[in-house]
Every structure is written in structure tokens, then in C-alpha cells.
Length: 168
Length: 101
Image (cartoon, rainbow over the protein chains, first blue to last red):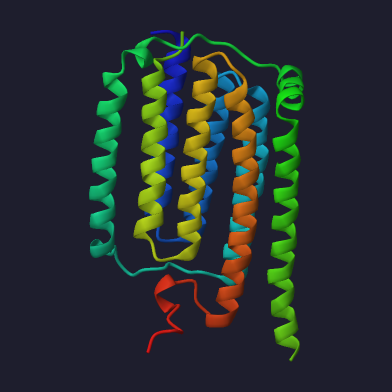
């Protein structure tokens, strides 16, 4: 067991525990803060798996952007503790179906011999990654920028409609 | 030598199932969106692991696109959430019953 594999298992435990705590919280603010911890752990895992640029993007966009946006919205509309108690009729089918798909996936994963050999540590420098991206995937990058523009316009439209209605 | 690829995929599957359970079992719209975020993140983790396993940069490129899709999805989703919260004064999906006879 090398140092890298110990780091992997520690990070995996942190991510799983933080996500599990996040999805079982009744207070939404607590859930979002636990999820920030989970995404920071994922960013470190990306660094371990040889993607330093994407690790930084994960920390900035997921933990810093998306989760803070969630926090702003939760604070703005003020959702308190949602349910008084755990709704068993809704949790039980979800957990059972999740267990079934988990076991199926585990059986599939460990029956394939290709996936048993350990990964060799390597790292893609940001300059290498950027050059690869714009040489091979320049068109999807353009489409992605268009998608972000459409999302921006859609968000503005949804927000603007409401202010008009309020004025009436 | 880090870990076998199957352990990494198992972590991604676990995270994906946790996100799916979160989306399905909650009635609060914010928690449903959080579940979708967890699922997208787990898919990205599997892509990065595949990128290391086959020593190709394609997996990392696809994670960048997943990131953009997640960001735009959450922006539009939260705008819709605020819109419906102003109309019905609730973020509970059970309260959206305007069409109910």
C-alpha cells in the first residue's frame, strides 16, 4: 500500500461521509455546507488523479460558484427545516432501489479483469490540457459557450418576467 | 501506483447512487437540485479516472463540458425555483397542485 493509495482511501471516506451527511440533513443550509466539504475533497482527488487544472476548476466553480449560489437562494427564499420527521414511505423505496443498483454495479465492476490493475500516477499540465482541448475539441468548446449564453438569457428572462408581474 | 480502477469506479457509483437517492427521496426542490449536482460530479469523477486509466486527455476534456452543463443547469434550475416560489410561496413539490381538480 503506497502513500497515494492511503491518500485516496482517506479522501474517498471524507467525500462519502460528507455527501451522506449532506443528503440526510433537514436544514438546507447545513446540507449545502457539507456538500462544499465534499466538493473540496473531490477537487483534491482530481489533483491526485493527475488533473491539476480541473481540480482548481472544481474548487472554483463547484465549491465556490454553484454551492454559494445555492446558499444565496436558500437565504433569499428562506426554506426552513423542511419535514418534521423522516418520511419513511419516500425514503424506503429510494434506499432499496439504490442498494440494488449499487450491488449490480459492484458485481459488474469486480468481474471485469481489466479494471483490477492499479493506476499509474501521471499528471497533465494545464498548458498540455489547453493545447489538447483547442486542437481536438474546439467546436464543442464553442457549443459550450453558446450553452452558457442560452442559460444566461433563460435565467434573465425568468427573473424579468416576475418583476413585470409585481409591478402590475 | 494509486489504486485499482475498479475502486475508483465504485466510489463514483456510490456517489451517483447517493445523489439519486437524494433527488428521489426529498420533497424540497433545493435538495432535488443538490442531488442532481452530486450525480453530475460523480459522472465527472468516473471520466477523470478513465482519463488516467487509459492515459488519454479525452476524459478530462469531457469533465470540462460536464462542468459547463452543471453550471447552466443549476442557474436555470434555481431561477425556476425562485419563480415558482414567488407564485406558490413554497418550495415543496407537493404544493404545486394548481392543476388538481
